[in-house]
Length: 388
Image (cartoon, rainbow, N blue to C red; front, side, top):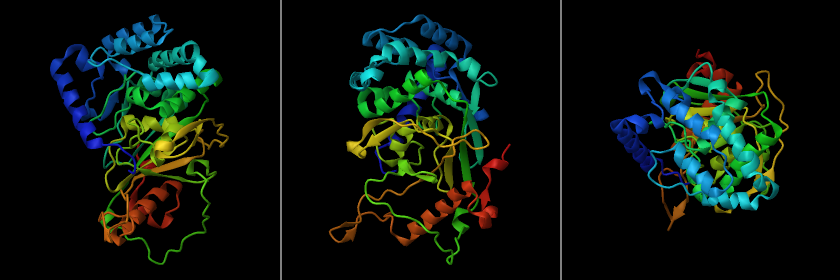
């Protein structure tokens, strides 16, 4: 919530674009896949036979050796786009990444193309994936390989956009965000060189039944906790449940040049980005939990000072469901840019107001249930694990 995301204007523009496509029919309508909200599913690119034949033919027959070829490939895959693709930030990232950058055309890009071509294999049982909808507790588990295929499709802007979901497409990042691009490139480089591990990533939507009536016990004592000095990062905390002080639109501004807590988390653990495809905007009584996302990168700095800082080997063990034992809980955070302006509160939503402290407690109790830490309040929470 504390980063630039401007979801309202973006979503309105997106909806207008989708309406325009539906009126024009043919290639423009099918390119984004037929996202049928009535069945609450997101159709993947191979769900449209005619479109998939065209996409797979282009990917399998195109060998990219220079930037002009790359931009032409992106345009050929997206004939509905009026603007020309320009990947200035991606080009700078490649030039500054040493040996990894030198392997962009020979190793990384062919690998991304091959991942997209694996769509019918990795999603052989279904050509659509379910939306995690507002108001309905649910969960979705993907393999690490399926996550990689989805993100490869985002590389070339091939994924559909739900009306209540963020847009998962890398074109904007590759055009203007060099450090973001480095993180994404490193993810694909690691997979291309080291292979994709046999593990899973789970996405849960939790819903509190009656948030207004929920009253945490006033006599509940805090557990012991440790405060670390400046220099320690949330991402480096070992064995901890990680809070994602999130935008209501999961991922916040990660693909729009945003670069604060949530965005950094998603860049270092790119599998989190998959949630943007199928998680609808969070309501006030909801949270989204991500279990098992692997960390691939390190960073320095924050916001405008954010810099990609190289490889990270995630040695966190797997749980019985073959997920990395890491839990991220995303809940809509309050915007609180400053406390006082000329001796007066600038924003009535400021974090320290009593009503907002109560608001935070509701979300924390709801979120902590994911780790079975709220055993005394099970009746107040709808369990995502109980949903078929």
